Image (cartoon, rainbow, N blue to C red; front, side, top):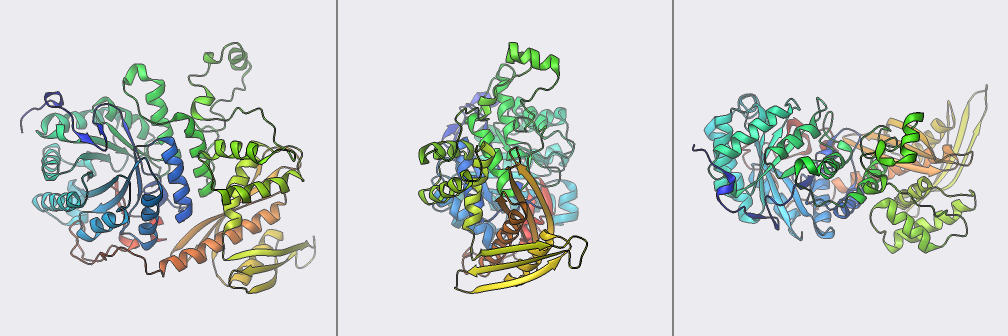
Length: 570
């Protein structure tokens, strides 16, 4: 191959903008991020996160892996139909049925992309795929051509690019660009690379591949050594114009490059990078909090950009400096990333408009009329029990409307009693009402009120789920602060998260448990739904040695990981 400079020809139009004018944010929170154990989301939760990502202004939303399961297909389809602004993308192996599933799921998107991948490193070719170098190239080209026949915007990922021989990597990239790929992703599959490695590989590929000027180059870095953001920024320095990342850095193993960190690094150090994203940075904090709420995984306090301590100063010298001039110890302002600094106090006399304005600020996007009606009614009820409503309370109400809306079961009555030092230690009686009209009352005992409540609800619903995780945290401060409970339940191959909020922490726990039970029942029903990709994956597999259909169990984790994903089994 001959040396080639990207400056020799005009850059292509891809996704509505030229390759060099900004760094695209390709957010994979809903695909790679959601596959991490304990981060599974249902269809409505994914829809809400996608709406928030659109408000954030990301360029591409990778909404899922449609061929992996009916649930994933449905989620991608819903997002494609309802979310406007970003390109809606779905992942596919180099397999006809996978590609057809993405094409079908994204058919109604305003703009869409098909993302295909195959492993290119020696270990992947030899031990996973059992394919020769030529066979991998042929499979990659065939996959890109099929995707390009359905969609003008096609991304190709060389899985395990950084352990692929440079000459062979260049050969694959040249072939897929010639076949029609418009974005080329070079992922650090196992999170092993350091910034110098990244700069070198991108420089080699972009400099040696003759048709490199016809594609946007992308980076997808995992955080196994804590270098995902640094490596992604190194790729930008080397010429990459798309960064693949996830909000709060969630993802397989140690996670992905954090969306909020790469956006603010490019914005804050514009003097160094001299190129920007198109993100609305003031939507970063609301998007982060929304994701934490729907997944039940709080952001660590010292997390860069969005952690509670990100703009906190305790040392006296630091406090004195910040009081005199915030720039003495702050390189960005809290309001730049959307941290609320609202002085309006909400209480029982506050109106619907004030509540809606605060809720929208915290959520990152407007609620529907039905959602607002339910949340505002809960706000008024809470205001009768608390003198001052904090932002944390409003956030819980905004998320709480979703918890209260879960069906088919709802709590009609709930009683719990304790017998300290006696047997049984606690007894709970719950009456549940089902949408089909059934009313079920059950009593159960336990070592404490929480266990008794969970046992009663499990008996009433008839779902023998296993409690995988349970936690309660305080929302706000003071003796009247609410408790936010999070529950994760496993049942068969399903794993779900539920949340509940109440001033009574026992009832909050019971609400969270029932919320998770409802999600299990709904998810189980969705798996039995006839809706699925019309092109059922049954043909020969060109990216794996077997010919099994694309079931959840054999779904790959991402272009930067070749192992099956636990979350995809849900």
